[in-house]
Image (cartoon, rainbow, N blue to C red; front, side, top):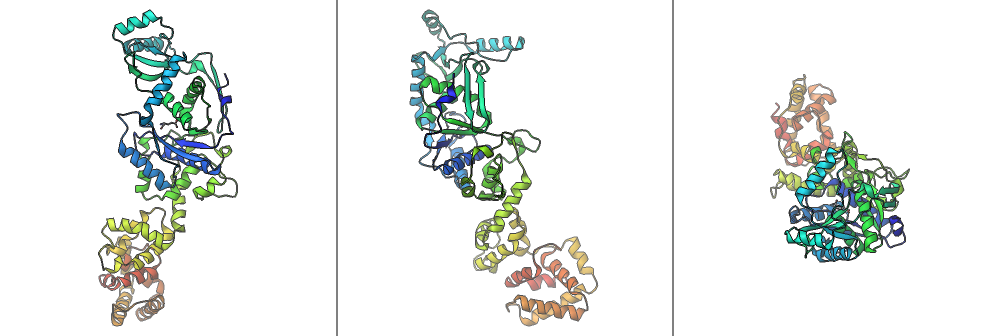
Length: 493
Ligand code: GLU
């Protein structure tokens, strides 16, 4: 059977993301969203969202909210209202009824104990576990007898061992599956009394919904490949046009294993909380499996990627998660921000620490904060770095060992004392600019008879408590505006 031949490239492009709200937005799902979004934008198509909430026990409204929020934050807006799968259950049941009537499906009364015994027998004979289709051809009398016993039935979809399922995968090329590798007739509805149809299950529900939503291309992780073979059989049995499939490579951890919860951070909200920016994360996820055309470089926006995205440049091999590259991209994004935008992103993080939020204080002044953001910006790779590096500006830091040692150098303290005296003479409230600051440094250097470099390093030690930090003059001018420079110098004398 040529199930794949039912699919057509000619339909208007309509793709979908179909997350299950049984957890927060996982990086793998978000990457699938990126590829769907890029493909839709590239072809002027629609990117739809379907919340697959049929697992009532594990689905939670808070997870749906987290998924929608994460997609929006990443800039992966969807078209129209999200489709809620659980609201469509009667349509799913109608499709199962259709399959029962057309003879593609049947009720199976095998009990859990019987199925367990069957599987144990297979294990003992070293056979792969599969349903042996034992209830495929029950006579009406046998069926009545099971019903009379009070047994409930699942509904199974017939999968012929001899079936050959082929499709042309946009990532993996020609695919071929044998019906005998699909585990026997597949359950499409949970157990229910014989006059009812139980809860419809994943493969059936996805096919019914994708067909109803006129999805042209199903783009999802390669862990769904075996499902695709089963789903193509369902499309054919239901007389629906199958979409084109593209199975994207898995995301792997540093050891080359599938990235999982055990690897720590896996949710988009975790990355956000760690200080990654949405453009960097979206950019990075695009690179997880897709190679940009030569000359494009690795730093690009989603819109730039959408202009050239295609599946020919999606790799078949798993994509290894590379923190260094993500950090580098995040740094690039932060360095591109205007000081005002950077301030807007950092200010809430500073405020969480109680910094710069006291109304009327000099450190709460947006223009002071913007200058601080501009000073720190070039050295940030995470927004969180902008919290750590801002700390000595908002609170007077103790001197570390290297700073203490710096102040022991001959002439260091006398030079600082001369500088402090000169500053005091000018008056603490007197504004200081770069030129005046340079002049004060030159005077103090001359009066203490030391090299300018020694005084600069000593100033850094006094002001920041450490020999590391951004441009000294800018640092000093910022602290001067807080009226905080003189005190920090004086404490060292
Ligand atoms: N709800 C399924 C999942 O999250 C959707 C798979 C699909 O795209 O068909 O894995």
